[in-house]
Length: 266
Image (cartoon, rainbow, N blue to C red; front, side, top):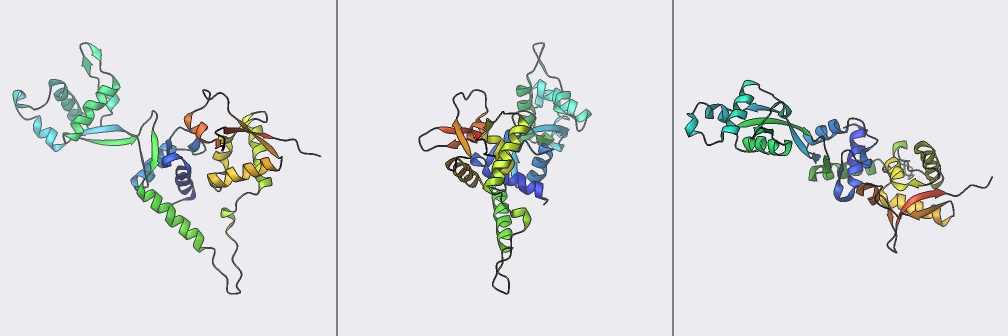
């Protein structure tokens, strides 16, 4: 497994309940997210909201079409759909039009009909990651995989023959407070937040290699040293639930959401 897939799993690990929206900010830096979901899903490491991408007739469905019409345990509408699927193996759902009283059936109802045919063994389907509001989450196998990765990296920190501990590989190095401060300034310029950077941008950049707790501690330390100020959010309607969840939950109940860098003395 390449590093980008491991990083994808680590991002999910840091999300609430180890799940997030595919199109959400937590996965914003990943290209071909749907493909990654499907590849990791094929390995059983994640699962995700699916939709039917293509359909073909199953042996049971083909056999059913040979019965007399009055003996069929399906509706006329379902029968027409089966006949269409038999004529065009691999047909996509959106290429089947179902009308009810002269009006095209809504996609949600149409998909329920396809799902019913599939559950009764009359058709076979290929599925893909949903196009709208798709969620992805870690499976038990995914959590176990990350535990093995963690064990592997820890094994690299072995004691050398002379009693000195080997240095961790550069990829495992974590940024210093000064490097985190520089990253905040760089991100602020990049996204144009005028020294009012929402924390979720920094989480997307630094988690991993930092965990959520480590980044929270670093930001609070920078605040104690008067390098930055952490400002609570007053109006939540402009942000998604995932972006709001990225805030630091302060002990007095406030959400510390924005980062302001104090001007450095020259």
